[in-house]
Structure formats: structure tokens, C-alpha cells
Amino acid sequence: MPLAILALAVSAFGIGTTEFVMMGLLPNVADDLGTSVPTAGYLVSAYALGVVLGAPLLTALGSRVPRKRMLLLLMALFTLGNAASAVAPGYATLLVGRFVAGLPHGAFFGVGAVVAARLVSEDRRARAVAAMFLGLTIANIVGVPAATALGQHLGWRATFLVVSVVGLLALGALALLVPRLPTDEQAGVGQEFRALREPQVLLGLLTAVFGFAGVFAVYSYLASMMTEVTGFADSSVTLLLALFGIGMTLGALAAGPLTDRALRPTLYGSLGALAVVLVGFHFAAGSKIAAPIAVVVLGAVGFMTTTPLQMLVMNKARHAPTLASASNHSAFNLANAGGAWLGGVAISAGWGWTSPALVGAVLAVAGLGIAVTAGIMDRGAPHTVSPVVTAGGPVCRKAEGGDELAAAENA
Image: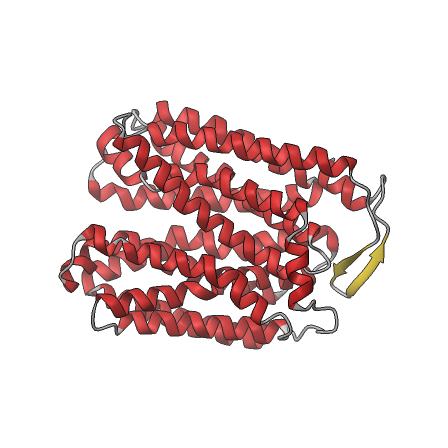
């Protein structure tokens, strides 16, 4: 893999750390700022709102900006948002800092995925995108636990200062390692939005919203499940969350080559496996032996859905893939919010702490149904000439019944 992928992975590490670390620091932030934990929880929502709004907005505004420069601008905004959070004098300014830090999240991954795919041959595109996402998964193993421990011992401001330093390191790596890419093939904002309206792109985004919501229906309440149902001590929660991150990493490593080989079968298989694992999780949560294993497996099959979904929307919007790629991260954050909400509804209804796993299984089945429907529609659709973005630039090739891309997606 090119060293530029490492720069993208370092950036993803910083983004993943700041996205998830707030969940472990809510009591500290609430105590320091004199507010309640539920009110402090809006800081998580502020970041997610920044992701959902920033992904299409910043990508559209930067549609004509050279991609390397766009990556640098987005990482600079991310660093600024975290630095502002570190020095925020009160709750309102911290809320703004979190929102600003979230704005470049989706746009960065959207542009980064397109850049990663451009840097390698076409038969390794999914592996390159998955390698970038490894930074996000490693953040859940190392970054989030370490940043949480730092915040608990030195104060939550220290956490955001360290994340700001990671942002500066990522800026340096991007500047040094990412090559300047040609700009003549970049689409304008109108073409980007037209590509976003393609039925297959919309169905891919809808698949992400429903399918990945199944993961967050459980992840949002994983700590409570492990303490209230499994019987683990509160001190074990950090380790269990790290196990989930290990599973995510294994899933990302497997998803890259599988997606390069057969995109849609990988998507179908991961969503189907996710539904089965979520049902099994409902029963495994009662065992101190089975529960940690289930946490790893859930992280693996859950994250296996991300690479094929990312490649699917990029392939189907290949005239203008950047906005579709970024919007996929808006979809993932909507899945985050929706899954957490539906899981909470199930718990509030008195169905038990593990009921979100069954809710998640239903959501995964719904995502699988949408994905299969999209696949059936795509098989019957006429295919036309489309540009293929390779390491050497765009190449037009025919996309008909025996097309290589169609074979890779449906094999």
C-alpha cells in the first residue's frame, strides 16, 4: 500500500478517537461544567449533527478544490474544533466546538476514500479504502481507552488537547505523503448532486441507515448490558469496548479483499451474519465466557458492512463519487442516532437490557432486504459506458452484461 494510505489512516485515528471518547467522559464534563450527564450527552449529538450536515455541505463547497488541498483544509478544521473544545470556558462553547469538530468528519472520509481508491490499481481499491478505515478501528482499541483514561486523570480538556496534537501530526503526514492528484476529472457541484440522486446510490445510503443501525442499537448500551446482565464490574467496560474495537479491525481486514473479489455478496453476507450474531448476542450476554466472544464477533461482522457499502455508492456514482462517498458517513451517523434511539425505546418499554440486540437484528434484516432489492434492480438495469478511476486516471470501458465491474459486484 502507498504511504499516503498511512497518512489517511492516521487522520482516521484522530477522527475516530474524538468521535467516541466523549461517551466515556460525560460524567467528568458534567461535573466540571456544573450540568447533568443527560445534558452533557448533547455533546455527542452535537458532533453527530456536525457530521450529518458537514458531509454534503463541505463536500459540495469543495467540489472544485484539489483533493489534497481539501484533505488538508478538512483536517485543519477538525484540529481547530478540538482545540476550541479543549479551551472552551463553558458548556455552550464546548457544544459549538464539538459541532465544528464533527463538520469535516464525513467530508474527510468521503474525499479520503476517493483518494485512496485513486492511489492503487482497480483490483485493490476496496483494500485501500479498508486500510484507511483501519485508523478508525484502531482508535477504538487504543485511542478511545487511552484518551478516556487521560481525561479521567488529567481532566477532559487534556483529552482534546492531545487529539488536537494528533490532528497536527495528521496534517503533516497528509502534506508530506499524499501526492497532488489531477483536478481535471473532478465533478462540479451540480454533477455531484445529480450522481447522489441515482437510485442505486440512494438505496445504498438507505441500506447503511438500516443495516448499520443494528450495530449501534447494541453498541450504545453495551456497557450497561455487560454490567447489568453479564455481571462484569464497571472497571471491565474499557476492556470490553477494546474487544469491540479488535472485532472492528478484524472485520475491516477481511472486508477489503472480499469486497474487491465480490462486492454485493460480501454486503449480503455481512448483513445476514450481523442479523444472526445480534440474535445470538441476546442470549450470549448472560454468560461471562460467551459475552466477550460475542462482542468481538459483533464488531467484526458489523464493520464488515462498511467497506462494501462505501465502494457500492462510489461505484454507482462514479461520474462524481465524492459527495456520495461523504454522504455515506451521514448515513452511518443517522444509523448511529436511530439505532441508539430504537434500542432505548425497547429498554424503556421494559423489554430488558438485551432487547436492543433483537431490535438490531430486525434492522439488519431490513438493511439486507433493501440491499437485495437494489441488487435485483441493478441486474435488470441497462449498463452504459462509465469512467473507471484508476491509479493512472480515468479510463472509459463498457459496462454491459459481462462487465468486469458487474461481475465483481454480483459474483
